[in-house]
Length: 90
Image (tube, rainbow, N blue to C red):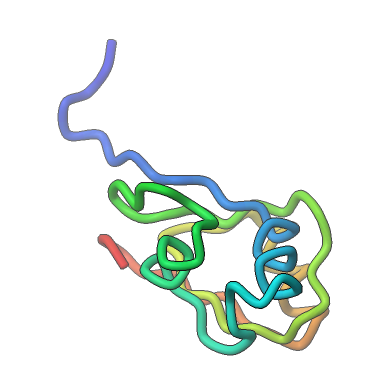
């Protein structure tokens, strides 16, 4: 059973964000869904995106996401960054 009103989020691993920063596609600093789409990290934003903890991140970034796993938040904070969780699309 699929809910018609269920939100669909793109998933992004922190390792993928770091790879994009290393390649010069993303600037370390404030990152949101629009920046991830522009950098080619995700193709469709859907209803927003969730940050997941697979991989490593060393850049101090501020990420605005619709959701994040506990491990992703811990990894970003350990690197000197912050994760902001917002409701609705970014």
